[in-house]
Image 1 (cartoon, rainbow, N blue to C red):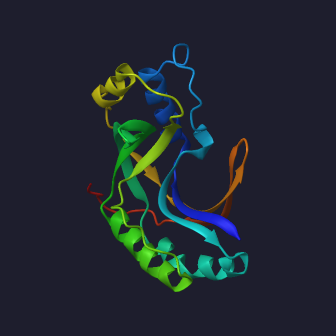
Image 2 (cartoon, helix red, strand yellow):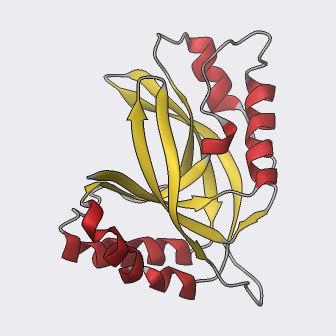
Length: 191
């Protein structure tokens, strides 16, 4: 069994922009947090979960329709927090993406039903995890997140990956099992 998910890969310049925003809001000389590594920044489209290794080749072929979709334009639009029992647990950066990405996510969900992968109950909200919060954060931390305004910079991604995630005591190790190349978009993308 392997722990799998599908993700939109971010170009290097988008990863660097996330680090720039993060370091502006939380300068590293003041805030010594254990941030998600830059090379792990991705937009999860579908967390598949535990999946039989002998079915992975069939899975790769069955979602090959991903390559019929155009590359995805996006920009980062805000910082936010996920809470559990009114305590912040995840710091994330939100994304505005091309509308057709939602259609693709729904098609992926539908195609995974034959593998008995349960559909996601939550609405797809494009975001990237920056920090898994392990300690109590004061109101100053929350205010910094909620008050920061991001200047939009447009980026484009042309790859979606099927990724294997191996959990270890020092963190997860990601391995790309397959890369789906998105088509170059001809025309104007709206979002």
